[in-house]
Image 1 (spheres, helix red, strand yellow):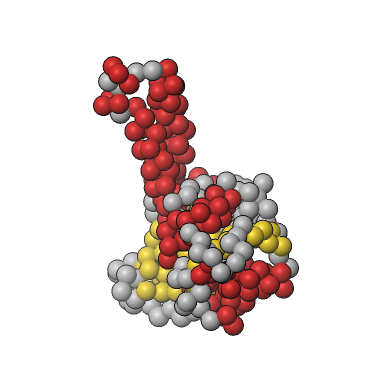
Image 2 (cartoon, rainbow, N blue to C red):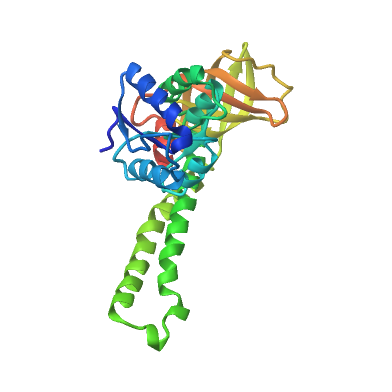
Length: 299
């Protein structure tokens, strides 16, 4: 199980001064740190090595989160994002840190010594550590990112069994063992992706919904669902409703299991696409409630 109370940190010589500030700010926030270097700004250090150490530890779930620092943050983020299940994002301010968490479930924060003032680091770290992932449609997209990484791994294993490598002068026991292992690894790697694809098909099923807004019934279609909230597309037949943030809504959603009622608050409304984002304030808790069954079928 990943260590949730210790943050692994690392960086090159250009990021060393800021890395020291990061370590101090993390300790003030109540977190321990595991520093993998570099430990001086006086000698040049290649960032790929330190970035790989941190990313590998997060990828293999030794640590739940990590922080990387270099001159710009660009190089280390490229390296880190080559590792499965790592979502490294360069953040230069508080707002970027919030978005990195809510939309991308960022688990590896990247800072650039040249572009971020040292007085902003504490606020960036606090936002990154305390902001929750929104889930819903964003979870589906994060899974697609992971699928791409896993597919790249599978293609690497596939190279081991490329027919051009099976010429007579290259057939030997060690190679054949690697080839067989490659085929086996492809199956293991792609199986979770195939299973998720089935879930995507289920999740794409839309459900009719009636939204009560200011005493008026608004017809819509629910196109995304999580326990925290849902996304709706307002019917084109409706006059353009005027939704504002924190408006209270009563909703009746008709799933294939039956009708279910819940309450929520408006979080955003796109007038062009007529898409409405809602955060649930009351969500059915009964295991056999139609909306609960719909959610379970999508997991």
